[in-house]
Image (cartoon, rainbow, N blue to C red):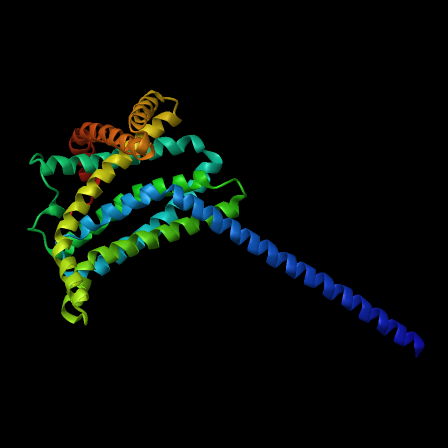
Length: 333
């Protein structure tokens, strides 16, 4: 009997040790998971902050695609574009970015420069249209039925979003420390989701602001609420027009910036150095606002580069690339 009791006592002791070990393992796993999660969130926040310029451009560019539609179609169109943006970032660009970063980092700059050329082309073409030159796309005209017009606008927005998303994801990837494949992938996915929600949530608020203002003007209990609502309704047309101008300027600026930085990555840094030197000289001339002046000067010069590239690309895109694409595109019967 005493031998059996001793055996049970040993079993109990072993079970206690095993339980303690399991508790340590669970505790360590929880701490490790929390640390990894904290690292991912921290890296995502830093990467997202670094890509903030491109995020602002994305938010400014998108509302122009909703002009001319009834209020009932605005949020569905925003949701369609947002879904396309999620697909761009998480399904296409995230794995491509990780693969390129691991196996072909040399290809990132040229691919981004191609995207930059597209943005410059889009922006420069809109500048020509505003000046009364060139011809408008069919999607801009009024003779096309609303369903086809909506489809063309959505596809155009998703295509532009792809370029801006590529820049966002690349900038974010460059800001993420080398912590292993899965941490980088998780961080990049978190950046993509957070930025898409922020951009298209903001766009939804912008395009519905006039409806919100109208509801405030009609149903507000306080005079200041009704007055604010009327001010929003009166101000939104001008705000949307200004946002369209900002969006066009943003495409040209971002495209030019991508090209300048891409040239530096490829070893042709003369243009980037010249822009930097001019920006530094301008900043020294206004020491009280040196940072702002340097940024504005750089953005302006990047925009000039983008406009020049865009004007140069227009004849190539319209007379060479577009006819080739039309030849291979299935014809509607």
